[in-house]
Length: 414
Image (cartoon, rainbow, N blue to C red; front, side):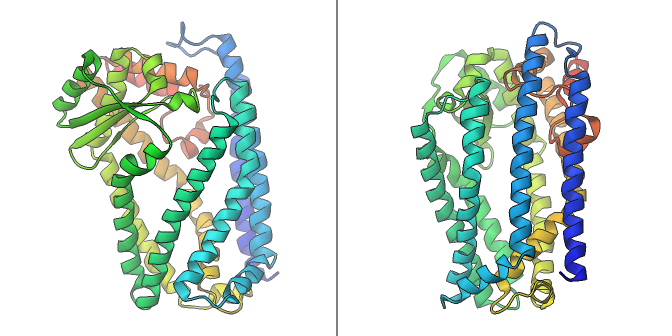
């Protein structure tokens, strides 16, 4: 193995080792403080819930650790063990047109990744989630979901890959710009298409017509300039007892979707504050800001990728023969994962900031901080969320503020 290969491998192992150390730090912190009922959580959380939360967190973290170790071994063998060159040669030997060749190259890798993840998914769903009372999915439904997901993802990924590589073939000198524009348009199109075409393949959407809750929702949304087209519940309980609510739609007209588990668990005031929080994200343009930042970085990334792929640095470094464009994309993506890791806490910092802004907006809009606080307490209890994450772990990985801090700030708004 060459010196530069060893440097890249060492960098990858350092990143993975640091991630494992953070996870260990988090579990050890929970072991020391996890049985303390946080102030303001009395009456909702007790010792039995905390004990169950501790056990659930340990089991899910252990499974995540095993899956990560397995995935890392596969990736290292594939990239550093010569498998990538063999795979690349095999695909090239088929003699397919460039765009078709690239589409097949990545689709096969996607299928392999999906197959390798099946045992972990089954164990998580039917062992851990069953044990802690979350899973309501039958084996038949799991298989049906798996097949539908595979078909939908294959159709979407195949179309995007074929279009992207066709652009590369048509414009060898400017494909980075045209491909970026193509992927941007496709992502916006999928945001619009998903709630009407893709999501109904998996869940039944039932309109909430009339009633005090619907009128209150429309009233709250009207106050912030959002026109609600429809309010739906979905049959999430046929898969899991986890809860959620979300908006769909582009522009001022929104569809609101409530999990049936959320409607059953929360009172009307709590549901309204949860939706006001989501409205806060829209009003503060958080989604738009994230899209702008992501697309700007993607544009830079596309140009950097274009410049690097025009050289033979990566193919020479990893001894890739024949047509190397697709193999170099794999190597570059691997290196990008190493280089981008230090920016993880930066991204999550801004995400947590947006969540705080949305919380304040919800409190100001509804004038009901206590309902927002209790809704989040119920969510953390029912999802067995760790109430005592290690501060460093939270700074790196939490896209939302730690729940105890968050509740304290919400109640401070009163």
